[in-house]
Length: 158
Image 1 (spheres, rainbow, N blue to C red):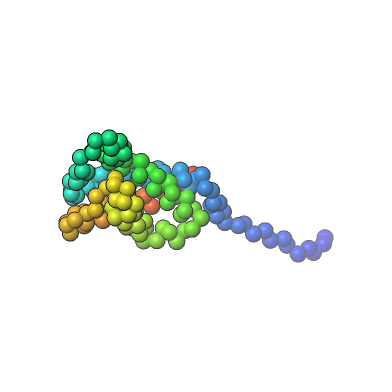
Image 2: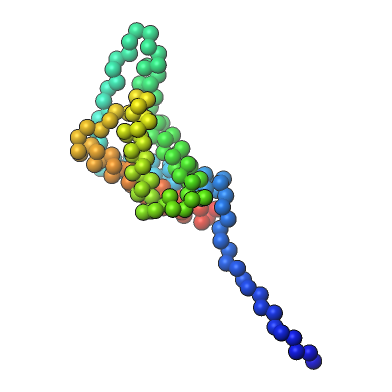
């Protein structure tokens, strides 16, 4: 009979590995669900009516195309899906972006879409009144929180 020292094996807790594809997929699903939640929030707390773009000048195909894109019902879904997928990919490698359960993401997205690039291109109009700003910001915070919640759940499943 020999006296050997007992071998201890440590069981490492399995930490989910980082995956760009899984982050994109979870964010995409989160963005689509959040777009539906945002549209419900806008029905409960309506925003301003879209301001009309100026009438197209003779031969101005770009303005006509912009007006068609801006009035398309698919635009919010496309922006929501793309923003959610980008958010999911970034959250996969830089977790602090998920602070405040996605509310920060929603506020950033509101600044980008309403007063930033989309307004500069002419796809949206700047919001004028306090009620309109409050409605827009509330709907985007809801979008961010729902995106993060769904992304987290879907990511655990994946």
